[in-house]
Length: 484
Image: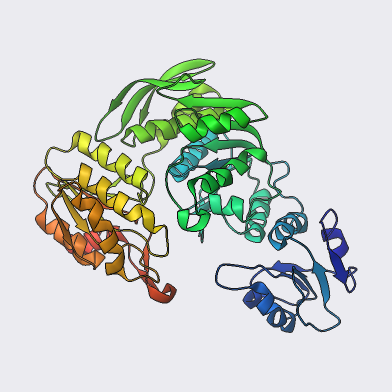
């Protein structure tokens, strides 16, 4: 495709050089550049792409999109724009031929529940006979085929390439997690969502957004790009969003009047049973994921699919086919007299949901192993500690993904919250040792919650060193089993 074709409709400040060049590839990572490519100079958190424009040209880039001038050979075309991220998203969409233009996309945003809701929607749509693409935290999927996922919402170049792969494989619908980062950083700019789904909003990512209001405003951007909206009306932010939605609005909830709602809710250690009410009918639903939060996730998925015109019988069957989500209240098959549950809970609200659910069916003690991630919002650390202490009988404070922070410094910020509750606790910095301590002290009827890592199979240490750390494997090894 010619560069001038890619620039059609892009707000350009000025151009130096020819735009009649053929562009064979597009990149934002100079290490991956191939001859005939267009390179985007993206200003990131740790690196500035402008510093790597020379390297990209040395590898064969014929043109660069940039915001500030850098010295390059005269044969290289420079395209100056005010917003390189926006330009990259729109150019990527054009380069791959607007791959999602005729495929309905369901975008799910919110602090907690995004992953589960996307899996539930995928199951419902598949029961309705659709081939579904999924993009999210755990993995990207084309039908049953699993692809690796580097981040919750891919960078715009990678996202449009993924859309193209899904189009080529005949996908009928796409469901994706839309993070607040991706909305702020314009990764989904130009994406037209058929349905935007909002789950909830609680404190998270304040290291990036600075304030809860900024975080809220980032989430709200999804609904400016969505033809329809499915919103949790029980959530305060959801009610704020609902007042501003321009297109068709579908509300769901439990405690407030909504178009889609649940009644007669029964929660057990195995799952939840409830009566689902849609505008065109109702049905009993048996979901294999415990907790009141699971009812909300099911309502979100049902509302989105109802907005797409999916019949109630497919919604019911699709919800009931899901046997669990990796790392989301995942009960391990330990064969012990105590239970071990892995959950991704890494926010105060997420941890509270998990612990309250466990509290409801635990006959013995709730033992919580948890920490907080480094290089992330430090203000939530004592809050996490207080939540853990309030709902646990015993806490083991340990390391999560410390990244470039001192693990013990993070733990020291958690401890004041736990102390507020008078819950007994121990500090064991090494996460494997912390899990071993929990297993060694577990008694009949206890429930041990391993919170924070969930589906992750690694731990991130200083200087972004990544080491293997799959809690399923760790538990299996400690119990002398092949797998759990």
